[in-house]
Image (cartoon, rainbow, N blue to C red):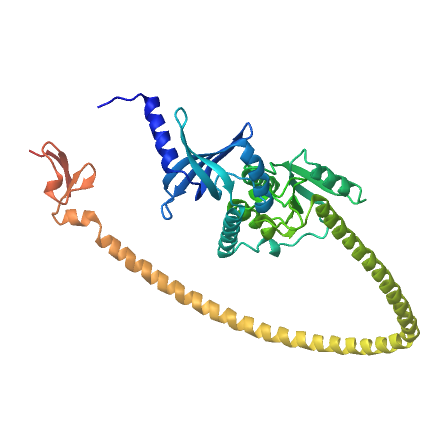
Length: 433
């Protein structure tokens, strides 16, 4: 059998593939890895078992720079997403085998509509999961304080949107206190970064023992629609939905609504719109206060006028009324005094009779009890004399002791024990043999 070199064998494989797989194929797969280098896009494709999620097929794919420069903008414009790991895609490929680099699928096109449908399906699955858990509308049930001034802001520290947000609040004339909790607002680290910022806010509030912030604002300044993928995740949506402080989002564009927007307390378009909402809300509160102040002042004036008129009328009626009331009360007090004296006298007589009766009964009861106790003592004395050990000894009985205790059973003694026998006229000491 002829022996081939590795290069010859690989060349043979390449020739066979080029001869047999001459067409391009549409393939559906999940992207397990996506990276760009020198304008080229390198992908790892995987297909997983529907039930166990175990990979059942893997392959490498490449999209050369000349093709990728056209595919990428179109894909992101239609889907609003970057091509990233975990995404499902429909790719047009042809087979290529290189003697040095092995087999790879070369990508010539990507169907954005397939990915768009998959993203929509995943978004609906996340929404259904949140509703099943009963947390989808939790944020909507929270109350945004009337004086919403201490704001926890989750944003990139260097983002222009954060600067615009703070500037608009400071120029409003109201005393707002925005506190930044930095987070990554684009790319694959968005989810974890925002979750960590929320946990930091919660820990700070929990440590102080009070809710330290009136609201949380999640804002993103600039960025394309393709940067919104990090805001459509189940973990982030669950954290936001169950957060105990109202959350306002200003991360997207007018036509884009992420899952994060859906579960938040309020969604606005931009950071400046978030600032405008807070300013307008506080202005409405101030207007209500001004209106209430005017209403209270007017009501107080009317009330004072009415009371002055009532006091004037009462002042004219008081002298004759007072004289009449005084006479009536004096007569009433005299009657009450007479009745009270009679009641007290009768009560004292009754109680005196009761006391005399109780005194007689108590004397008789004490005498009878003393007689009973004296008889009881005499009986106890007789029983005690009858149990005197000396009487038993005088009758001829004896008492055996061991270590000061009465011996009732021989098995309690052992050989060599010294025992003591008490008789009427003496004591005998013995040793057990």
